[in-house]
Amino acid sequence: MTFTEREPAGSPDAGGTADGAAGDDTYVPSERRIARERHRRGRARRATAVAALSTLVTGVVLYLIVVHAPGWPRTRETFFDAGYAREALPKVLDGLWLNLRLLLVCGIAVLVLGMLIAVARTLRGPVFFPLRVLATAYTDFFRGLPLIITLMIVVLGVPALRLQGVTVDPVLLGGTALTLTYSAYVAEVFRAGIESVHPSQRAAARSLGLTHRQALRHVVLPQAVRRQVPPLLNDLVSLQKDTGLVSIGGAVDAVRAADIIAGRSLNYTPYIVAGLAFVALTIPMTRFTDWVTARMDRRRAQGGNL
Image (cartoon, rainbow, N blue to C red):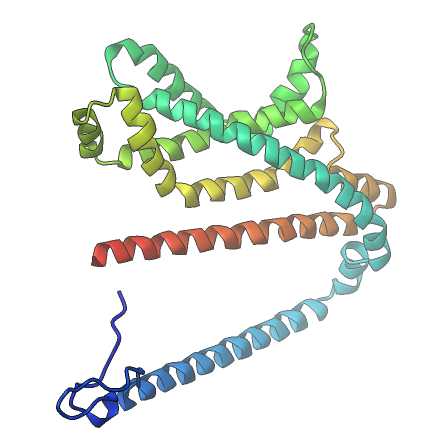
């Protein structure tokens, strides 16, 4: 909490009379406070100037190292050709729309499935033992299996079965593989949040007459989800990047669009364009995650001080 600094009632700077009679209520900061704020502003300006200067020096040094490398002319022609960049940009942006749709659909599916798995792993009682075993086996298996292998198994293996009524669309199959893998990670995040809620919360809910299901829904899960927002957002950032892996099945996303142009021209500039497009999407999500984390830390600190 922030306390307002005021002069003593009898001080001439306080805006009142010497005997404490009611006078002007306008706040007048003390000279010490003004000097302290002036010092803070000066220190912030110096820190900003030093950071800008060090960043500039580092950038110049890196630039000189790169451009004076023996293979820089060939690298610039192969990876940083402006003509190929202009050719690739519209096609990469068209493919990026597919990545965004995958992120939206798979993100929702991952959150729902991850929550169900986490709840299944935290159910109590011997009757739920088989469900807990299945949920544990699911998380252990898909957290241990590399995502690229999961994608190959689902995208290439399911069509090979020739099952009636089962889709062979690489986009749907790739999204399924992403959901299977990321649900295992998100389930562990949710489970950590559920187990971080103190048992007294559940006991208090039960003492008020709530059933186990009601206590879980209205007391435990809201606290668990709120505590785990930053790691959940980090998982969504990773999911956004990994949507580019669906290209191994032939789906024309941003990565596949860049691959088609690079394969035809033998120039890798389209890959740089696709990478920068993903970075442009990832940075706002990362900064939003940092903002949410800092906001929650401030709230916890204020609660602790109170």
